[in-house]
Length: 315
Length: 315
Image (cartoon, rainbow over all chains, first blue to last red):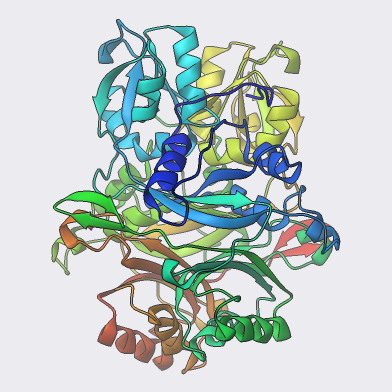
């Protein structure tokens, strides 16, 4: 479970996502790039901080299985972020793009495999959960093994070559690994409504451009006082700034030290960017008056998925 | 992965949680009860609807790994809920209690096992994630196998008796399975700040009592219009009702049909109950004016965890 940084595991959903983002979104097209995988979000973040990697893509939420909260926590106050230690000018990563990926999940296995013979299915834990109903119905006795991601799972079963061990992954894995065949497709519980949102990370904050309808993501820490949530939203509503989404979580770290396990971190996405929208700047200054901490995760061009004739189209 | 309803798997965190809730919280003490496990939240919900089970306990969120979103979706619009099909008077389950469980995670294995010899670790996927840093450091080559829960994982490794296969579970599993030993304790990434919130489910809504400081959980569906979130919170703020927590997720079902993948379901916990607080009633009526759907998940006595001298105490 802890391969070296030098090992690559192509064929992941992230790889498919980054290739599509860089060919479909006008803010990113025209770049020449190569991709590689990292065995954890922390190592990917460190590679960006070290200048080894220009941009990194991480999954942040799925419409079925929810937010990848451990990743969000890492971005806000992970052990790799020197900002949390008071070093406000130290380098840190910023969210500089988003992408929403929708693709049917596939069950892949080495040649000779049959559904009846599958004893083990490997994938990212969220992907296993997204397919749990199908797995219950079709391979009820198969062990479900958590891998670092769909690329790592595909690489592992390709190397093992054991027809009783399958992986759940996408088209990219099927393309990349010559020795894998597809046993089933579209095995997610909600076939028309399972999509994953990715964030693109970089060392330099992105410059907002009006025609990209940019959006800003923030983390806000407040005491759990009556009305705290409402006051946060009011800072934006009073300035006609739309808050697109919000999530609250209790603080994960230092609960015992602080004697305050139920203080909150709120995660917000708002329309607009501080660079271009004075209202967003003012709302953030207003927040700092009463929040313990306001952390700008980044501003980035919006990515939207539209449904056209029953299939997803990016716009 | 799909045992029959007749199989029991004691020794889970849920079992520990329900025993503590029923001995520590004044709203529930004094009852005589027995417990049993179900192989899925859906089967547990169905057992309540069928009258086979009086009350059921399900994990709903963890401070480290976040909301168990699939479970929340099941409660709101799962295939088992006849309300969603327009049968408003058909039976459905209600949230009637909450409990917050904090206990160090333990690595358990059959006698003779050593850390060096562990090749496979089984547990609930969220628990595996809560311990991932320790697993990376101490058993980096071990497969991580997703089980239905910590009771199922403990039962499985106890039956297999293979000293290379371990489970992550709690004290209850160690008590129940004579043939398991503890290899490590406190292996979660955030030892002082990992706690799980459970909901108690029943067929009859709970009657609110003022001295229990009751709380109400709701799901609200709205179109993704500018200011939608703020208007929802304003319904409560205008009436001095505290919103304790909020989470937004895109609708999971029917996205293609509706051509609206980014409409939201919001999950809110608010202080008070419609029975006792006219303001809560009025806020809900106000919400119905502009929300597509307002679903009362239930009202229940509050459960709080306090930190006393570095250890958790329930109050």
